[in-house]
Length: 88
Image (cartoon, one colour):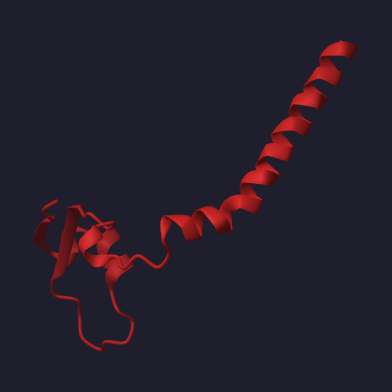
């Protein structure tokens, strides 16, 4: 994905909301110009820049307890729903 960016200069007097948000209290002089940068898209998960840390088999093994717990909770949820239907 290509990154699309655009920037525009703003006069602080015409944009008091931006002036207030972006003014740096550490400067002694007046704020003369604001620059607003708009990023329209970034592809964060580019595989070119992600180093795989675990193999699929390692992940499957590590996630097995989580999957088992989810299975048990789903079964418990099903049983509780049946109990509620039987009462109602």
